Length: 482
Image (cartoon, rainbow, N blue to C red; front, side, top):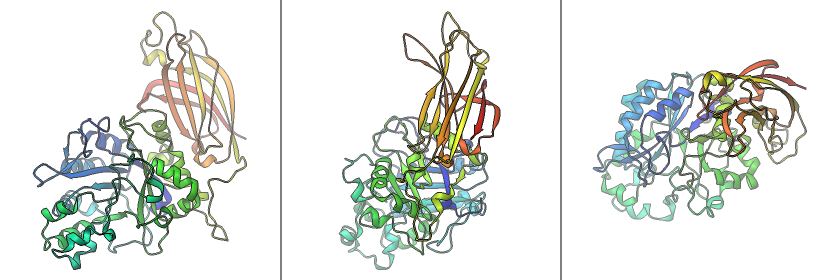
C-alpha cells in the first residue's frame, strides 16, 4: 500500500446517492452508507442549487429524482468512511453550482471533515501520496472553478469573455471531442465540467466575491479533474509537473482503446482515469469493467444499486487485498521498457498459467431456502456455470451436467482454464436450477480473483443476486495451477 495512489485500482461508485433507477428514484445517504460499508472508496455526488438558490442539494439533475441535502450526505460519509477500510475515501463532485454556493460547499467540507481533508499545499502534485500515507483521509476530486483561473482579470466585461471559445463549456458529458462526437448525447450528465451557465455565474456572484469564493473551493481539491482542449490524444498527454483526472464514458473508452490503447496505459501510470456508465443505462445497470482495468483505469465507476454479472465481477475484483477497496495494478500495466514502450492491450499473448478447477458437490440450499422454493413437487435440479472473466482471450463460461431431484448435488466435474493475463482474471461461479417450462432459477453466485486463489480443496460460499452471502450455501471445489 506504499505506491502512489494512481498505481491502484480503486473501488468506485457512480451516482452513489441513488436508491434505484437513474430517472425517478429517491436520492438518499443510505446507498452511500451501504457502499462504504462494502468497501467502496470513491463516492460520487452531483451537487445542485436548491430552488431558492441558497443551499446545496444532491440529485441527478434534469430528472425526477428527489433531492437529499448535501450536508446529510457529508455527515454520513464522515461517520461510515472507514468502517470497512482505513484507506482514503475520494469524493468526486459533479458540480453545477454558482461560485457563492461553491464557497458554501467549501465551508461545509471544512466544518464536516476538518483535519481529515487532504489538501495539497501546491496547486498541482507531481506525484500522489500512497494509500498508506493517506489513511483515514478524505480527498475531494472535481474540476477547479473556471472563475479562479481568471480571478485577476474579472470585471463586468468577463461575461463576454467567458462566452468566447477560449472558455468553452464542455457539452454535458462529451469528454473528448474526437471520440464522443458520435455518441448522440449518451454521456449527458457525467462530465467533468461546472455546468452552470455564464448568466447564472453573474446572477449569483459579484465580481468582488468570485476570487475569494473560488479560492476557498479550489484549495480543497486534491485531485483536479478536467481535460485540455482539443483531441483525446492531447488529453492523454502526461505532464511532468501535475497529476490529474480524466473521465470517459464506457463508449468513449471503447473507442479510445481502439486508437489510443498505449496512450491510455501511459496516461494511467501517473494520472487518474475514471470510466462511467453510458447515460442510457436508466435502470442502473452496468458494463464490462475489464476494458477499463485492462487499460489501467483506476476508477471504473459502477451503479452499486444495480445487480447482475458485471457488478458480481466488480465485487470479485475488490475481494482482493483484504477487501480494503484498493488493488495494486499488475506490474505489466506500470512497466516501461528500455525504449520507453508500455504494455499494448492489442498484443497476442501466450498462456502464462493454467487454472484447473474441480467442482465436487454443493450443499446448504435445504437450510437457506423453503422446500418449495425451486420446485413445488420435487427436489431441485442444480447445475453449475463456471468460467473466467478477464481479458478477451481468457473469457469463457462452461457448465456441469444437470443433476435432477437432489438437494445435495455431487457433480465431480473438472474444468481447465488457460490464462494469458492471470493477474486480471476472475473465476466466475454461478449455480442455477433447471426448469423445463420456464427460465432457470438462480441459486447462488460468487466471483473470485484468480491471483488470490489458494490451491487445494476449498469450501466456497455463494452469494445472492445483491452480492450478500448466504448463511449456508457452499460448493466444495479444488483449485490447482499447472
